[in-house]
Length: 385
Length: 159
Image 1 (cartoon, chains in turn blue, orange):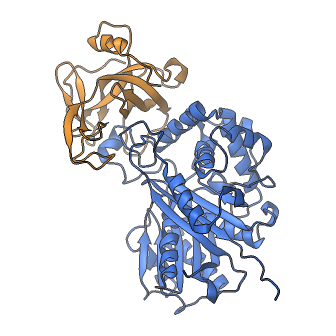
Image 2: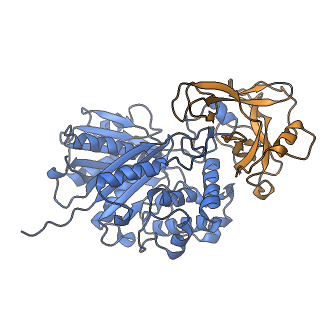
């Protein structure tokens, strides 16, 4: 099967950008990625645009702004995993030999406060059942009940990610925070305080995927791009059902996607050098650790206490600062993670660099439910002949 | 919280529950082959896809499985703030999402996981601002309500 390389990355930093459309941000990120890859008009055969709120023909508006239309352009929506879904489709097309080079861009411009989603029927909104943070809170409570996570652990997770974000010039929040400050912020939905929740915001990220044999040998390889949806039955999964059953035997979508990705890449959790994962709220990241197999269920507190997943630790998780530092523009967030992983693999991450990183994983989970797990590896140096 | 007199205002949406003089009854489905119930009622079993769903009335009592207080109005909601939102495991094992009617929603310790709960009617503003009935769960309290006796007799710990 044709190997796929990440030939270029681009980012329009996540934050608040009044007066700039999501599509303009996407065009800027895409220009950056194309310049890195040395890809111009006529050098690619398709483009995928990830967005949940961008509207009709968002990809056409992004590429149209650059005079690049003419190829197939397809918008992809898969909630928080939209970027992972777009990347998965692009990679599959290259692997199948359909295309040599594909552009992938993720864009979003979201309002402030709680996210409104057409996912919910109007009556559910009127009943108060569309309160996203309440479901995050119920999930966090369950984590505390069943995996021994404490409220201090939730706060410590925020401290970890915000400490990393200090060193990311592209993050929205770049000031460190203390456990006390996190717990002093107002309660949104018990046990989640305001600073334990990521902020929906605006931004764009882009990736150029290309057949590896058209790239320099050292170019990072896309080793896996897995996408899964939920198996039915769990009342607290991101499909946000109105009812569910005993779910102890129901494998969550993150674990399904991770299994597929590890198998495709031929690596396991112990091989990872750096991870970017979904930290919509502090509880979400702690749950993801066990769902990805990074630590056993119930081991989160010990990992936090030992600093194992901080920058400089055994396995840095969210060295970019995560969504808690960057904010979450839905369609762009997964590709933003890939941008960070590629920077880490190239050794371009500055003060937050994970030394010698060779295998990186990017994970999202969200509405749908959709989960994506992407694995990128740095090829070993050529063996002298 | 004082529950509205039933049948009260019209239902917020069709097909979710039945209102009569005494009760609000959640309308579920049950697959003969999977033995599992679901809510709202679907044409096929949502867990297995089996095309053998029969209509069932869901149990009116259960145990609290988790809840939290929503402290800011989500988009499209114009009812009171704060309000409780949680999951109750009904006596048949089905975990159902709903509003939780408690007087002091900030104090989770006052209503713990495993507490006996019952299905009640609650009222919220509909899309036209007029009152509409929706299901909710209330703690079973020491009243003479028949539903309480049923809950008190329910065996097992759903937590």
